[in-house]
Length: 411
Image 1: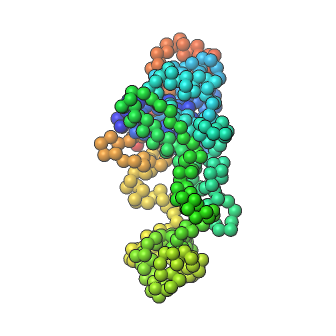
Image 2 (image 1 turned 135 degrees about the vertical axis):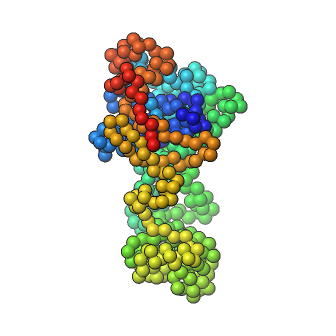
């Protein structure tokens, strides 16, 4: 690893998406990430279907590249002791268990901070570390509902709709990554680690951004607005003769371009639509008029006319179209990883490009316990100790552990 975080050791005690996504991002940029998993079962998402060649869940694979897997029984004194030893030699710990869940193993902030004052301890929970619901569990769907996101998603007058993406989980994982990096920078000056505390709740509340501000300013409770925005009837999807097209004419210049593209120049100065405020007041009528104008012709026709008039527009691409887009390929946003014995797996690529210290996909998602022995040797354990702990069930060893089993690099 030669990225900007090379030399940093990260311990991840995470499951599903939020914690693993944060730790994977750190690993993409060069950190040595050791993922602690349960003996026998591992991260819950390993077993979630569908599976890649019957061996690894795609969900797990999407959030666990650039990591080494160590299988431990944290409920056993010996397994917990191994985890503490690893954490005491680490720079960063990332977990997304319920608040207090790791305390029984001595992996809580207070215990580890006392043993390793330089440790940056990042907790991603459902509700955050304080407050009356701090110790309650939550997941992506739950938090999309609780934090209000589902109340503004879907068609007007329809039922609640979940965002297709895991926005609560991944949003919290992104914020956690930012928090860890700020704590690393602070440690450069102070020499001390600190606790980074974020949650699915806080991630969703921050994403609501202007909705929250607008509510407090107006007192109006926003609802769903379908494919568009309540503040702009010219910022939404419309049905063409063969498929849907998104139009995002969000200023006065684009409004004029839209009217020209639709052959409706009389709308430009129509008193119902002549400025943004009037268009919002008469939004339903304008949406119907635009829809009627769009309906007779195919998407390609409207793409040509709208772009000629400098109006942003786009078909609603499915994943098969997106992943074959020349721009997506040019930005290297489809990565291919060789899984030993299973073949290639393709996934989303690296979203941040650094000119001097770029990210890299060096390791494929690991098998459960693939690196237990390797990591323990690095921590000073003798072969006899490793075999004894394995025999007691405190640790889990992947077959081939004696050979070190070096995986192939990603492409």
